Amino acid sequence: MPTSLADAAVEADALAARGDERNLAGMRSEWADELEASARSADYQERAVSYRAIGQFRFRQKLELLRRGLEDTSPACRGSALVSLELLSREAPGPVNAVRPLLHTLANADPNQAVRRLAIVCLRNGSPQRDTMVLLQGLSESDEQDAQLREAAKRVAAGLKKKTTR
Image (cartoon, rainbow, N blue to C red; front, top):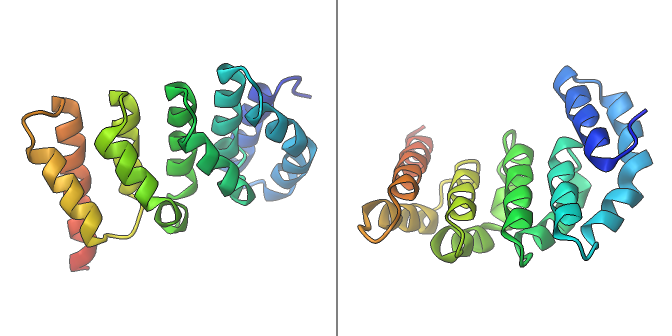
């Protein structure tokens, strides 16, 4: 039996990977209150664990809480929320499409380079919309951007362009 949210999230991720929906649902209900409380903690490390756990638990019902993580003052929290968003959006673009303007802002202007790259990676799972493609193209061609960020933007833009030709 896991004793911390972080341990429970790792276990939940393993259940999800095995497709054990029944036990995963049980863990979600057991840990939902703790996850909510951690997301409201004054300690950014607890908040980061909570935002990361949303993805590990495949907790689609917590997308609004995840949005709060994307707007958190801590880069660690924003990064954890982005990792969860990417995981939750792999099968369907809905979660990314729901926060697309926020992802554009993070990709274009977040002060943390890792957060910016994670936002770009999340955009890969969204619908191939023109405004996203224009933003990514601009980032990939800008000499003012970090080389890793330019490369990530170029890769994601190319992937989205492929989606439009299918």
